Length: 335
Image (cartoon, rainbow, N blue to C red; front, side):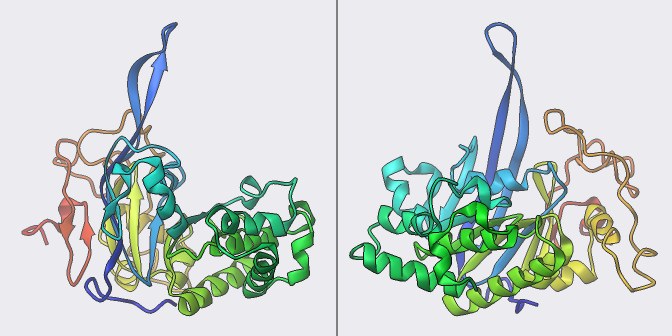
């Protein structure tokens, strides 16, 4: 497991404040906007240097859109994304370009980012050529060989095409490609979810080793809580476009406070006989982000809801010893 850190033990590398990414719903002959899909609706995140921050939630909760919005692969509707103090959302494309080198993304399906027409050598070296890393082709080829060795692949594989590799090997190639430009932050979007369990473990061990060797920082986007417990220092749980709970990993797993977090953890297989007895299951289906429920967005599925929940939106209340939870049950005076 990754070494836990306190809230103040490392400087903030990435700070996301009130991030909103709404997609217009258009209808009619003139494509008039009649509403919005609130994929991300006021998300705050702090990712500290040298740590792993996991962003967790069910499919469709908006977590992938958060990652893409940070990199401006989709344009946010509002908020701030500060990397080393600079607001990425306020930068022009030319101003943003140097910072793209420092923040790289690894995708769930590496084939979406690996052009099948090119050999691995060209794919891994592409970023180096774009950012002027390496004096010449020979030096970049040597660097590609070193990167493939670092991600536990034979350097001779650089002369093969992506279709010649397994899913786990392609994910390692994608990792080598991201590392080629010497990033400080890696956004890993479901980076191991498509892999077999044994291959997942190898990939997680590799990511952990690289973090120690290179001082990398990870924003790890996933739905798999077993992966989170192994790798993350801090966890933010996302539901219907909002963060509903955040806490250091061990605190969140041992003392979850939000009913949604408790439901997610109840679904994780466990040898603890008390595991399911103390955690209620999540009911029903996720509502549409185009028409989110009033009040607490989770109240339509919550086994602990009461009369206040449909009427008022809870704020993120502070937890002890650390963290926050968007639930009236932890509001001061209710405990």
